[in-house]
Image (cartoon, rainbow, N blue to C red; front, top):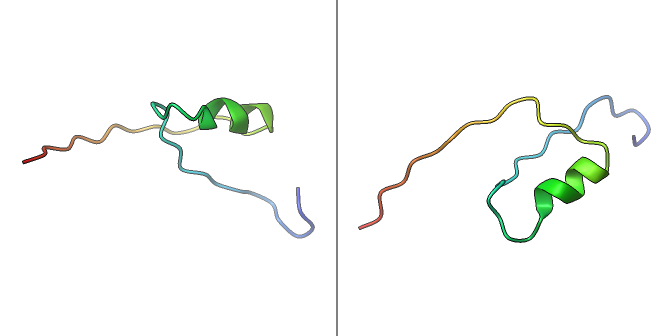
Length: 42
């Protein structure tokens, strides 16, 4: 953890094909909250 920093927060699209969730998990982050969003496209 960088000096003076106690917590870091990320927002990640778990469905992203980039594998971001796996990368952040490997770096020591953990899921502590999740939510779903619904979008209607026109």
